[in-house]
Length: 355
Image (cartoon, rainbow, N blue to C red; front, side, top):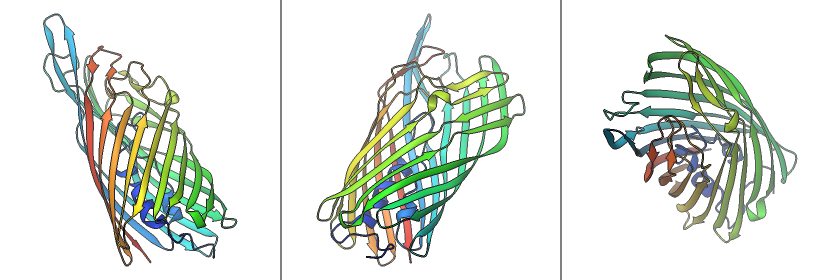
């Protein structure tokens, strides 16, 4: 077996890897602060030259209740959003692989539209685009190291009603680095990969005031192994340092703050049904903190299920998936509003070509 022959006979490693990374396409809304993707490095483990386009839509339903003298009723917040991504990878000999990814790892959107609520008319929109340059070097079939840099750009706008304040922020850019290592045992499709992504900081100049945006460092552990012929066990855990992350405006003060870190878990099974069809089912969980949350992200923890199917024909692979996420109940720290019974539904597709 050469270093480039990464697929074990009897285990659907190549097919199920696409299903595993489906979680980053449709499931990350409200997971770990304002994280939307976990910035995966799985593209580096694909075989040969590989290019992939991804598209996804997530529709959250987030509402709560607020009671004060003469005022009670339903509060609706959050809006549907779309994500798109690109991944490319190429081998340079048996040992070196280089990759490029484009995604939107962080975003926050909130719109309070019910008259009578103290934050009626408040809107906040932040988004981050990321371009990552990644590399993997294999010492042998078992051990490899990962490294790279990410260029992130953030911008946004805020409209507040209490106090009255509105500003649009110009984009700012920062660099992050990625380091990691992996252990593989190809004959049983086993892989354990650990990657670290550094924190980033942005200073956004606004039409009125400025904003300081601090996004967290994180550590992600990915694990997979064959457990039977054509069956793969998939698991991951991601820690994000949200206790040192925030969005603060120089005039309006703190817009989004966090009381603690988050750890998100995923576990699932991938199965190859035929030469053309494979599938996966994944369960996700993020424990609630139990602390009051920002009015702009009024959920705490989550649980999810994702079902993905993969069709492979010659060099083309098409993955489709549906995700349902139950969003945890929360109490906001400014108004004391209670948000409960909320959820999000996501759908996504990936189209990949290998050659």
